[in-house]
View 1 (cartoon, rainbow, N blue to C red):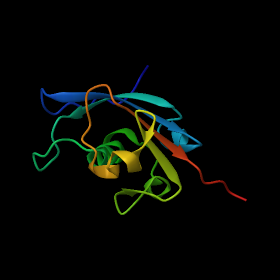
View 2: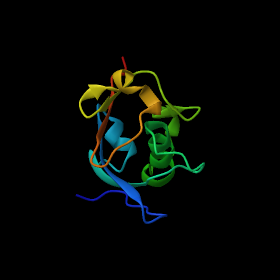
View 3: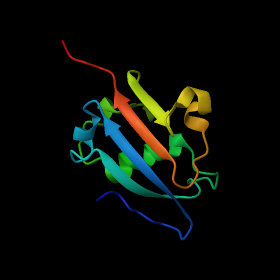
View 4: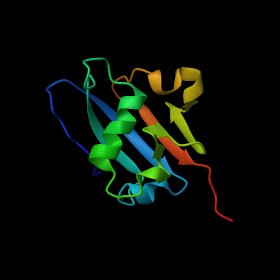
Amino acid sequence: MEGASVIKSREVVPLIVEFAGGLEMLFCDQRKHSVSLPKTDENGQPSTVDFLVRFLCEHVMKDHRKELFVIDHIVRPGILVLVNDADWELEGEGRYVLQADDNILFVSTLHGG
């Protein structure tokens, strides 16, 4: 399984990040990515889902249409985010502190018509 593995420090949080509902097209048409996320963000705070989203946009997304995934660095409405199979709203949304081997799934619920 190929994926992003950008390591800027020795301490990382290994994650599985998945995309569905068409979002995979923004991420090299690859549904599942193994990601080694730095354990802390740019401010030295523990890595959260918000930091993961920024990291994905900067290091994993190859498509230039970032607005299909985020608006103002926030996951756009219409994208369901699951943290270990639970709605991220139950986990604190973007403030959820990521743990080793977490599985984060982004699912687009938007359909053209």
